[in-house]
Image (cartoon, rainbow over all chains, first blue to last red):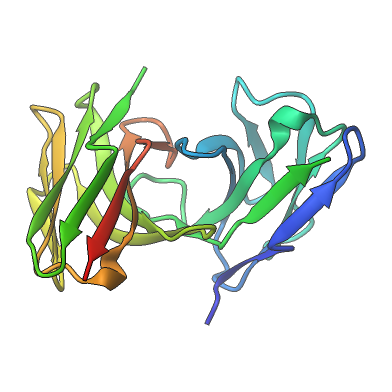
Length: 114
Length: 113
């Protein structure tokens, strides 16, 4: 049973057209993360939520925003996608923010920019 | 700044071979280290998590070791199978860094019949 679900699996958008990616979880975890993974590169953390507390990484572009309306859902909004934003976007959860908790990943959304 | 390196970047072995994947990290002040598997076009599946106080973890045909002082971890896969073909990533959580993962770029493994 899928525990971290990302929709859609594939998303195509036009240059500059806002796009939203969705993540939901059935684990009731407090922490949700968004990673960006470009081709043949390591996943890179964009931001995370601890409950409703939003934590942005210092080098995450302003173009990327996130919303977490409740425990189960988290959204990644890209306000004006550029060609360089084409990537796999991975959502993950963990029960706590302490380092002894494993992160559970979804299958990702692959974003293409036309 | 923590940097994680995985060597080799790609590896091809015949079915049945035992193999070792390597991971090194520059800052030994880690909380734990995780090994993940990533199939093409998919997300990450957690394989093993080693706490900083542990030396190794085992799950089935997989064994991961950790030498924190030298900044190294290895993932040993016994009796490899074609179904093991995937990219294997290691990631570390640094002490005092919350639960943020710093990933290596992975080793792409192909197990051939």
